[in-house]
Image (cartoon, rainbow over all chains, first blue to last red; front, side, top):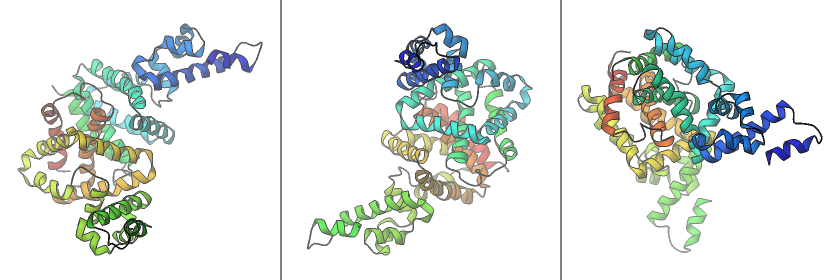
Length: 199
Length: 199
């Protein structure tokens, strides 16, 4: 239906790039929600939006880039992770913890992240959508880059996610108002241990 | 309204203990949801249920006991924590991690916990309801028993909660299917460090 809708609004004109992008993002949101990240193909999303799959790749690069744009994920693992992972190994824990809380402490990012997590808690579709993205774009990428078992990377991710739930969702004191510096001091040694010690 | 409803069903008879308990739990659920754990008083819950506050204490002990019964929290911190906290200090991390995943691995407990967490994610009331309970019944209790800053206890709790989100809500592999023994080996040293080392 996407192609008709887009064309119909301005008869006799080709849809502009903004309209085309919006149609692609709308189709992506629908299919990611319906099928989950893994089973929603770029081909099917392009078909729903009434465009050529090459155009989707032209606008958004990979399926991962499309997901990040469609879900308004306020972080871009392919861009951010290399900077964090490739710095001095002995400060890896500090860099990860600091970056994590800087993203969460930004009010706009925080709302987007809470909306994404909420949808994972409230629908099997939301969980499916997030599951493969977290598994491949975040955990898998870190696991490959550092040559570590995925279970260790999951333990590190769990540490940060759990503290974020207590700080930003439940807003429990004293962690709700704690300085990022104190959180880095407290949590970085744990992340460092998971990501650098022998399994 | 609770008192009328209970009496009205069987005119001329006093409500039986089961009906009274049900009226108290219903009133408690309503007031915990409306006001949060902290601001919902036993007195107000008793009034809503049309019973004497002494009867609420007789049935459920403290407000904490009433919350556990009303919200069907599948764990009872006042009963469980002393056993975990008072054993040999060098195995504290192992005992906590093992008990945590035993509760979550039980299908009935898991559904109840996910329902409680979901309500915290989807409504400010749900968050308020859980906030003070987690703060006082869990974190506060552990912090006092071990004479530790609350922030360290929160870091330990966050580690377990985050891995539970990845294992039971997002169901991300390999942590979704990991043996509890492997999770204990992986996470217990972290919990042990937070709860036994100097701040």
